[in-house]
Image (cartoon, rainbow, N blue to C red):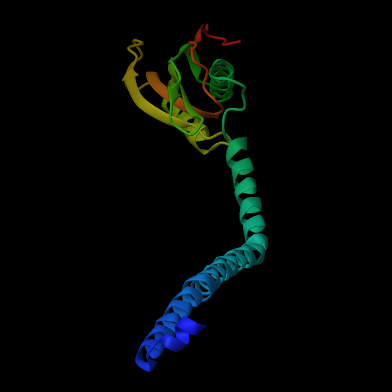
Length: 211
């Protein structure tokens, strides 16, 4: 205290001003700045929580629409699945396609002489193409009716690579007998199931009765 009084008035004022500046700087650094930073962090966190709440609110409001969309997609998938080859694997699907093609041909008076399946073809998204090559004979009307039934039936099938040839039977051209045609075609069906690592090929030779 004695040393303080010994100082000149200007020195005392200078020291006092310096002490005030140092105290102000310490107060700013130790008190004000941490508060400002904490407040800014709190504001940012509040903004994040507000954005999260808005997203959750929008999700809740759209839940009914999502449920309706899922239901519609499920019903559509069920309708499509019923038109595919209902089998567990490509081997079973090929056997099913061979049997259905043979039975349908017989119902339209078409003689199937041989059916041979091709290796299954992966089409992506667990969809597999199952294709069979068919050879036989029949009259033009019967063959056309059979092909129409294949492509418009309950099963989703597609006729590919069709060829027809006239059979020489020795019957005069003006005869009332129905002309017989030989045909060769490929029929493709579809299977919705995971494809195994090893593919299997089914070969079925059928006689005139196609049992």
